[in-house]
Picture 1 (cartoon, rainbow, N blue to C red):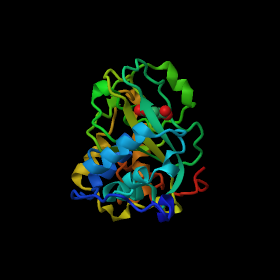
Picture 2 (tube, rainbow, N blue to C red; picture 1 turned 180 degrees about the vertical axis):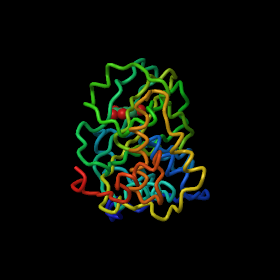
Picture 3 (spheres, helix red, strand yellow; picture 1 turned 90 degrees about the vertical axis):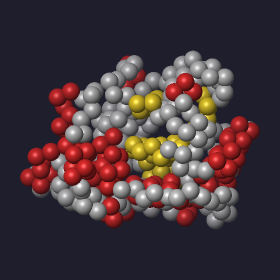
Amino acid sequence: MSSDLLGAEAAPVARERRPTPALGAIDLAGFCVDGFLLLDGAVDGELNELALAELRAYPGHKNRMWAASEVIRSVFDVETVRGVLHLLAGTASYDHSSVHLTPAGFPFAQPWHQDSMVEVRPLAFDLLALYFPADTPAEMGPTLVLPGSHLRRVSNRSLARHHSFRGQRLLSCSAGSVAVLHAGLWHCAQPNRTDVDRYMFKLRLRPGPDQANAASSIGQPTAEVLHRFLAGEHPWQGTEAGVDQVGYAALWSYLGGSGDVSPEGYLTRTGLLGRADPTGTARA
Ligand SMILES: O=C(O)CCC(=O)C(=O)O
């Protein structure tokens, strides 16, 4: 994330105190295959309490809290979070953000959707970072996602005719978790069956030109990584899983992962390996 993103006056109010585990090749593989990573409890308790108090008291427009709250901006400056965002988006810039409140007892789910209706870039992608300041168990309505759906381009709201999918996953998590999503991932908000309001703050980032190869430090694919790609089918895909699997491997290569992790060496055989283009013009 660029330092511009936080703004000169937005010094972090609290610092990460827990150890910051480095993201490994297997995590990057997980992001490519599933379309998201859940950083469970990445933000510490004191900052979560401050953020939750501000979210509860915030009187303004849901899309303007980012500019108004130093505390909220600090959440995304926690070392682990900032590191993962940089690894997946390079020198990113702010696109938009929103406060997402599911009031206590709210009985409805959102329709399934992708946040962006139009995506013309072959491999480059925006990133969504969903911050949950409080424990968000299943009954409180964590975001529901469909692992592996991120490369399926759809006409956004046409997904709404679906009610549920095999393999869908609730992002139940502890306080301070940040879910980092490929912006193409299908998702929807869920009912809140508790008597406590559920808050989530979503930040959308545009990637920098250095998103291509941003994760080149991640190292060679281990046997575990190769297995993650070759076994990277999802229960909702049926016989078309192979098409997505080649896409997951291309995403790995675009982000800077080494080697050909595609089924049957497809990227090598077709000459596609290493030809990632962040502008989206070379392989339109
Ligand atoms: O609140 C949530 O869990 C998800 C919200 C969402 O995806 C949206 O409003 O676009």
